[in-house]
Image (cartoon, rainbow, N blue to C red; front, side):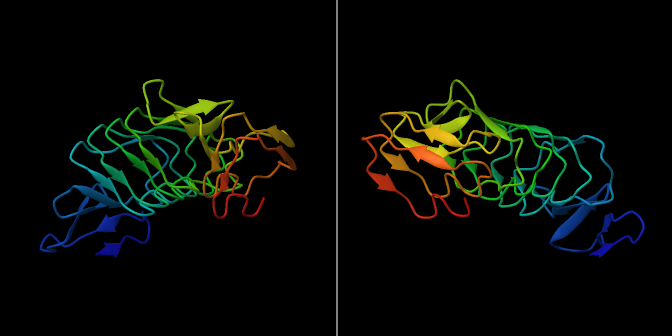
Length: 212
């Protein structure tokens, strides 16, 4: 496996038993895992091939790409897959069940993440303080999570999962009925200074307010 010095494209020997390259993009030999998208390939929208089931760790972690189109065969997106990208909006596929931590780390331009109906696990933190424009929008048919004022809760409203990065308010009044604050729920939030907790609150998980 080598990288072209000019284009940044990946070049793989055709006899390599583990990897292959298609249009400069690195895949597993069976083409089911997209491993790396070249940083110099350009900023044109990239459509992930239908055969791909997994987006590898840091597979799109680069500054140029602004649009990625995902299909409903994708089953897993690994940690930091889109970190440091110029993505502005992304629709997560309905086939996805887990959002892994760090996948939007330092995505400064990202404004909208559409979370599909089958997502049942969100492993926080999914971003950091650089995601100051990002909002998670939960599909109305999702029965695991819901969004209130841009903040993500479990569907029953008992656990606060994620406090929205683009919320510039200094004070947050947590809704009545919240029993638990999830890990990293307020991770690296830039603006928050004061929280009013409800009487229903019983548990604050580790790192819930880390680097706030």
